[in-house]
Each structure stands twice: as structure tokens, then as C-alpha cells.
Amino acid sequence: MVKDSKTRSKLPRPSKPSGADDTAREGRLVTRMHQPLLDLVDIRARERGESRSRYIERLLVAYLSADPRNPRLDPHGRILTDGPPISKAGDPVRFGAAWSRWVALNENLLGIRVPDGGLDEPPEFVDETRAQMRRDGHR
Image (tube, rainbow, N blue to C red; front, side):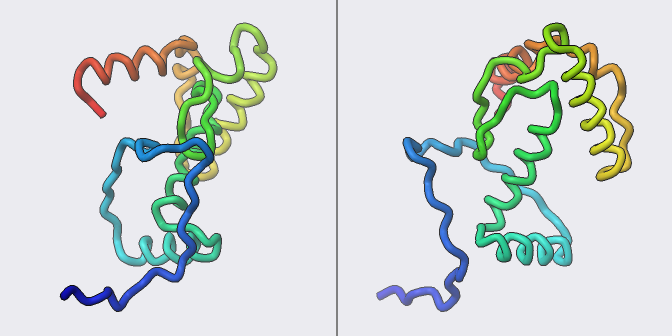
């Protein structure tokens, strides 16, 4: 007979999105971090009633959604649209404002200056790069 585990999570389990099936999350990301950082992640995830994994996923989705070159993402990180949500050619003022916010976010949060070369990225860059990665066997 197998004993029940003595440690059980007191965090609520995240519910599956409506219409989601068992393949909702196809990839796995493993990272190593120092214990103090892991403790902070656990504290912040717990105060939101989320698992550590879901909390980190939300951080990544929020960060990647802030980049105006990326296509729109749903709250679980699935791509909703082809190409970026703001067209550099169709709405240059709105794209410029979003780009300025993206640059400021990177400078303030990470201390990194985003190279202006990113402005020259064609709208189909993400889709083409994802297709190339799949052909090359990258996940």
C-alpha cells in the first residue's frame, strides 16, 4: 500500500480555460534559481492564489505582450493574431507610442536599452521565425 503524501499544497489549483484540452500547454521550461528568488516567487504567487508556474507564466505573458512587435497573446500565452497588433505602417503614431513604452519598460525594469534596430523588424518576423524553428526541430 502506498501512503498519501504528507505535504499538500494549500494553493488553489488553477482551472483550465474553457474549451481547453489536455494539450493546452505543450512545452516545458525548466530553470534554476537561487533559493531567495524562489522564496519571493512563492510568496508572490501564494498571495495571488496561483501556482508558482502560473505566476511565472503570467509574468512572461505580460512582458512579451508589452512588446509592440509581438502578436497578441491570450492570458495563457497562445498567439491570437497573425503579426503584431499595432501596425507600424498603418498606425505609426500608435506604434511609436507603444515602442516608447516598451523601451522605457526595458530601461526601468531591466536596465537594458532596446536597440532601435528592432523597429526595422518586418511584421511577419515572428511567424516566419517560429516556422523556421519548427522546421529545424526546435521547440
